[in-house]
Image 1: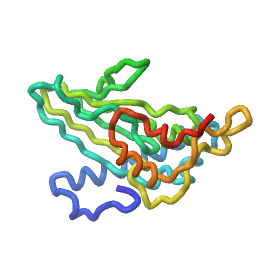
Image 2: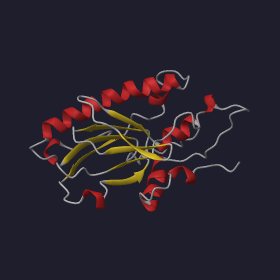
Image 3: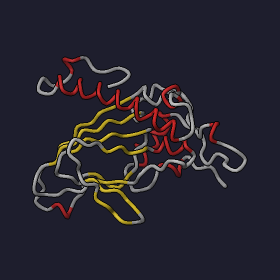
Image 4: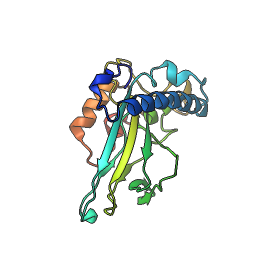
Length: 208
């Protein structure tokens, strides 16, 4: 949906208007979130926006049908998101879980609420000040589940910038922990690796 959104006629008529409007609102929200994240890192509020974090956004709309034996399957296996941030709007069925202290914890749906996951690239740029959360989706079985997801940075492979730990955050006591990468190379590695439960960070980690 950014930087080159599809033509309206390329979207299904049943959801054309709402998808277009929803994407505009998510880009506006992303602008605010990147300002807050920049400030949380001690940077100027427009720092992350200036280096392209808001330039690319992909959206996915997921429908998980009723499963008669939900204990035998997963909606999405353990993984972290590759991009900068992911914004999730989920219905009241739930199913999202995060890995916390080696235990899977439910993320209860909140009416009118959104879930924001920090991605692999943002952890790299923050030099581990931020953490990309391991998560998965389990099926509840009783009712179908619907979610709308906005990925900032994950599919914008035309962006040729190199992303690594932000220079302003580095010091003698806080040397870089990761090598630089492009979005294209990181996404290619993620597709090659697949959602096997292994962090994409290992691919970028510098040797101690």
